[in-house]
Length: 69
Length: 204
Image (tube, rainbow over all chains, first blue to last red; front, side):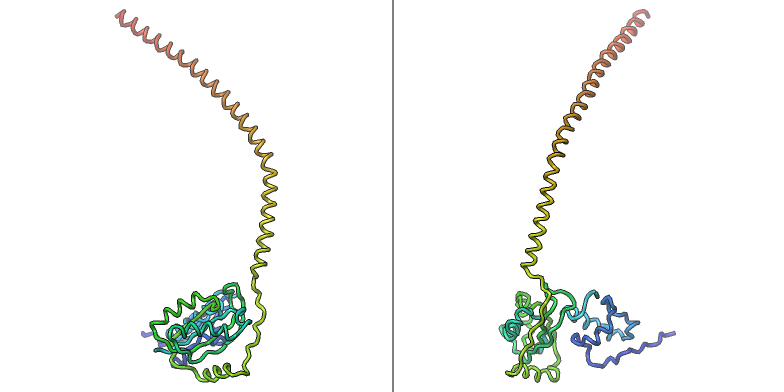
């Protein structure tokens, strides 16, 4: 039996996740600063990759923590 | 020529002196290598998520510029060497976002003034030196204290080996004496055995 196709929590044709949008990105971080897993975000793999890239860019610029306090 | 988006984290100490100078260092590097800056504006002044180059706060400059893709590597190298730019991020952009050019023009107008960045909890080099100095004196005291204790120990140590040496010599002498004593005895017994064998053969 084929696994049911999981629908993304986020419409994939939305504008790209931006590293400057810290309000949105910080929702997907644990208190320790880890990125939430896909089962938690409910994103499709493409959106999750976009989220990962945006968070990592924000971390590089010192906008988001690598390790939370 | 491609359109790029650049984000630069600028040192607050330079920003405090003159915003336009700080901005000029970043845009100057871009223009030096043939890039044309479309928009450049102060994005935010905020505290950093972690300490970067001993700074806990920084000012972010958002730039949209057109540049030759071949020159990006050279621009990156120059930015790495610059001390005013603490971090940078260069991405390709599809277009200049709406409202960006208006904000850029608003900054160019005479009314615009940059609020002074708040004080950072920067560790001053003088404080560091003072701490190091204190540490050094404490270490020196500790060493002196050790040095005072050490001679007494050394003196004891000097006495102790002499005793040991004597103790070592004495058994060695005893051993050599016993060995010498044993050796002739063995020889004597061996010779006596030989003599007896000889005697027996003669008898046969």
